[in-house]
Length: 97
Image 1 (cartoon, helix red, strand yellow):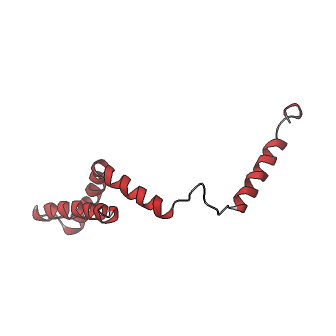
Image 2 (image 1 turned 90 degrees about the horizontal axis):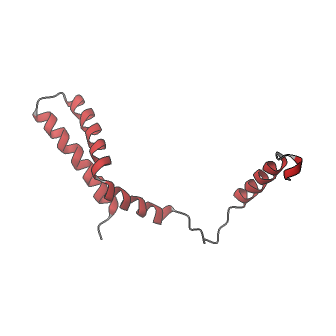
Image 3 (image 1 turned 135 degrees about the vertical axis):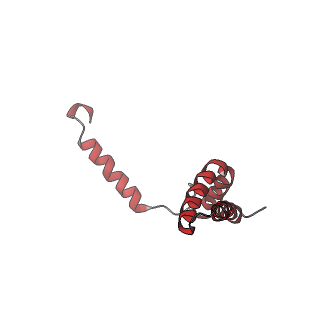
């Protein structure tokens, strides 16, 4: 299986290098060429590299994502949720409590 990081980065750099080469061959200034090439590479990658971006996203989630069944619980978040629930109950009219 190919590493999704390598595939996505190589595709983005390839798009940028291709656009940059085209603009430089056409005789545009290097700074203008680099800026426009970056914008075009971004736009094209957003449209055409969806599959690679999804694979990279799954890879990132596998590495850094939190599992719902993990043994580690965030006690601070539980406390904050209880406080918010109590505040929500305090703001209700008397008949709804």
